[in-house]
Length: 119
Image 1 (cartoon, rainbow, N blue to C red):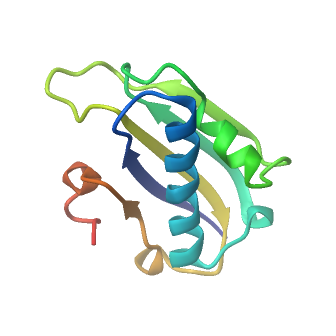
Image 2 (cartoon, one colour):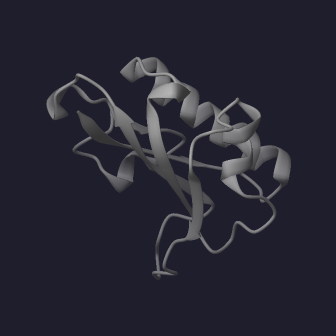
Image 3 (cartoon, rainbow, N blue to C red):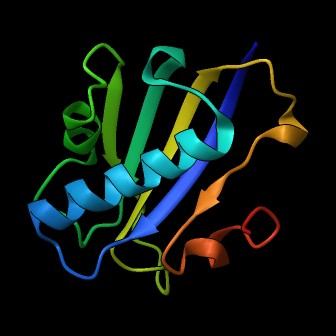
C-alpha cells in the first residue's frame, strides 16, 4: 500500500548548510516516527518558500543515501502572510500502516501549517 506522508521545517537563514541540515532533520524524524527506510520511498516532492534559494532540499536527501529515490523540488506560491523560510515535503511511501497510523512531522514552528496533524 502507498501512503502520503507530510513534513515541514523552517530554517533561520538561507544557507546551503542550513537547508541540508534542516532537510535531513525533517526526513530522519519522518523515518523514525513512521518506521520506513529509503528503500520504501517511492518519491518525494519538496517545496520551499520564495525566500529559500541557496540550495535544493533534495541535496540533503541525496547526502543521506536517497540516491535511487526520485526527488523533485519546487517553489511554494508567494502567499502574503505565509510562514517564511519553510521547507515542505510530501513523501510517497510503501507501508502497511493505515492513514490513521501515519505520523506527519511539523518541526520548528511549522505546526501552524496543520494544527490538526502536528504533535
